[in-house]
Image (cartoon, rainbow, N blue to C red):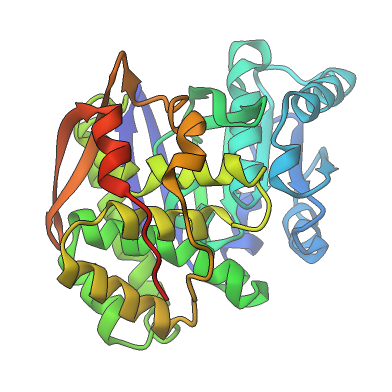
Length: 338
């Protein structure tokens, strides 16, 4: 399946197909030089599969982990591109999860004012979230995504077979973003996850989640209106990631807490908890929202004393409201769920 999206006066194509990793070379023939960037957490067999048919291809691998989504890693990658004498007629490919896609997309956007860029997400989180919509970023001074740009990949290749090497925890890490999509925009997607076998239906789940996010991004490519509903659970979630120094909680797990704490309806909270139990995710950390206050104050959605927040009306329907930061903090309270 091929899906397309036109944003920023630029067209991106999404290729969703099992084993497509073996066919990426067909879309790279017009480039003189290709650099594939990954981290050492991605199975090297994926790199071998990708580059065996690529001409004039080199690869660059950096250490895995959120702590490496940093200015230091950016500088090292830029040095490598300059050493290879890359230019704007060449191609850089990101092969990996969210950290790789965020960082490589950012580098592609600033190297010689923009170089052609493909994304091959190898985690569920990256397939349904990071690779869609053109947001790139690195962390700075313990602030999540403090520096970034909008830069969409020319092509994105989605292969559900690469998910077979993920741990259960990493699989769930991406599933939480899909749950969020169902919660804010697509009740049928939410119900599919809640009621059906997730593994048996994973291709349909991925396809629906990608279509939903593309639909939202098309309506608001620069994240100034409806696209902000995608931030559901993220205000607290990003603050928790920063509070824990990007340790202990994965991104999706932090969002899982954020969704539950930002949801006011008890019946929806209970449905979320049932899904969490279904996928064997136990909320074992009691969150004191006051402890993460300073990190919430650095949220990019804040303007003056106010913050724009997505609010769930019912499953599949969401609206944006503007409230004071104090009211948001007070509304969270100190919740604990088992």
